[in-house]
Each structure stands twice: as C-alpha cells, then as structure tokens.
Length: 358
Ligand SMILES: *Cc1c(COP(=O)(O)O)cnc(C)c1O
Image: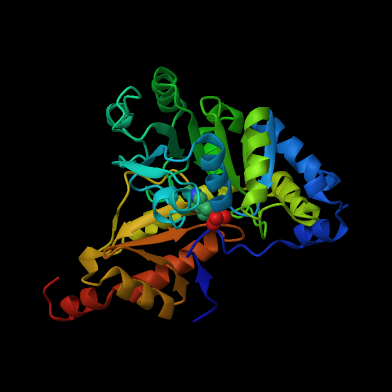
C-alpha cells in the first residue's frame, strides 16, 4: 500500500511553497487601524472581483457568517436558513448564542435551493406582534451537504424578488463561491448581484491557512467591522494572511476546475463499485457523496475500511460517505483511490462471488 490519499475535505490542502513565500515577504501594518497595506489590497481586490463596495477579512467562514447575522439583524430577529445549511448545523448555533437571533429552518431541496414557496411561507408578517420579525434569509453556494450543488442565477433572482417584497436582506454563505462560478462558467460577481452580503473562504480548496472574507455595501461593512471587533476578530498584522489569500486568488482559483474534473472521475469510478450509489443528483463541483447501504456496511465502517486501504473520506450520517477533491490531487490519485475503495468495500461482494451466488 502506498501513501494515504486524503479526500476527507478540501480544507486539508497544505499551503503551497509560493504561498508561504508570499506570506514571508508580505508588507505589514496594524489592521485595527486599517494600516496593513497587504490586507487593504486584499480587501479592495476581493470587493472588485465580486463587484461590491467593500470586503472585510475574517478569521474563518464561521466568523464571517456570524458577523453577517450580527450586522444585518436586531436582537430577537428570526433568521431563515436551510435545514441542511452549514450555518444551521456546523457553526455552533453562534447566531443564536452570540447574536440573539432565532433560526427558522426551511427544508433544503436536493439541488441546494430553498423552495421559493417555502421561503414565502417562512417570512413573518411584521404586523403580527406574536411573531419574531424576520431579519435575514441565508443561502449557501455551493451547498456542502447537497454535494457541492450550485445555485443558479435565476433562482437567486427569484429569492431577491421575494426578499424585496418582504423587506428582508439576503446573505450568501459562499465558502465555495469560486467553485460555483467555475461550474457555471460565470464571473463570481454574477453570483452575488442578488444578495446583500456574501462570505467566502480562502481555506476551502484554495490552500490558505486561515481566512475568509465578508463582502457587501459600505454601510454593511462598517457595521461588520464593529461587530468583528466585538467577537475578537480585530487583527494586528494580518497582512501575512492576506498575502496567502492574494496568492490564492492569483494561483488557486482557476485550478478549481481540475478539482471538478477529478470529482467527476471519482464519482464515475465509485458508482461502478458494487453496493455504492451516488447520493446526490449529479456532481457539479468538487464534492462527491455516495450511499454505502448496498455494501452492507455503515458509513463509519466503510470509512474505517477505506482508511485501512489508504483513502481518507468522511461519514455523513449512517449511510452516506463524502469525498472532496482538492489541490494537489490529480487523475492518478483518483484512479488509485477508486481501486483502493473497491478493495475495501468488496468484502461482501467477494464472499457472495465465492459462494457462486453472484
Ligand atoms: C467550511 C464552511 C464554512 C465555515 O468556514 P470555517 O472557516 O470552517 O469556519 C461555512 N460554510 C460552508 C458551506 C463551509 O463549507
């Protein structure tokens, strides 16, 4: 058996040498005083790429999403979020714990959208004093738990129309926004026209060690800067991190297309294995989720066997397993990974074959 192939997540990327060099050489200053030139240039550049007024660096995607809720909402507001959203499942309930908002979930469709009719029903009537007022609608693109599904611009426009009617702002968790842009063949700015704020991550497939960006209007970012300070996110010399993110924008974004190619290759290989089926409508970006029920193994047991065979992947619930492709995984790694997983999941298959019952 050769080395471990790590497909557990797209966060496992080791910062490439050029990125480390850029960090070493970064020009620095105190960013709480807005005097870090590298950070200022990253924030300006990100805002330009997204076609928004302003952008503010955050320590993590979780911090970006929390600060977005804090900046958009008042204490006691209700935030509408998908029942499969990262903001709902994986951010420790921060918007409630710290933000004093309640979360109202809407069932997430398999394609990552929150159906317009369900959103419509979830928005509160502001004249009814019994209800918590709706403060924000949150979407996710690409959608992690929906296997990296991409929200298309026409859906975003429909949400915008509904939000305008309701007078409610829209926040987009765009941790993998660049993946969505590449999958759609559209510039990233086309994916955020319809939202009031967007968070994106430099640590998902882009290889930066730390960093996320919250983007929006001048007034929104001014409020976000105050909230960031309140949650301990004011940073002194973060230009060293901004240099990594700038390197990511220059060198790591376009290559995400390769991750989409290797993900499709991986999916094609995995579904050929007896007992495995694709657990998502299709593979649009860098995430592949398979259902392992047909192998007779639980997801956790499957993951343990795959690890023994040299492939790291992650259990999602009892019956699904997630793989993510990322730098510097390439075609040969995928071929090797598929062969290893085939060996690891083939126990039952081999037994039945030996019994002549295949
Ligand atoms: C990873 C992730 C986040 C949070 O980012 P962290 O930097 O890990 O806090 C938010 N949303 C989605 C969809 C993610 O995948």
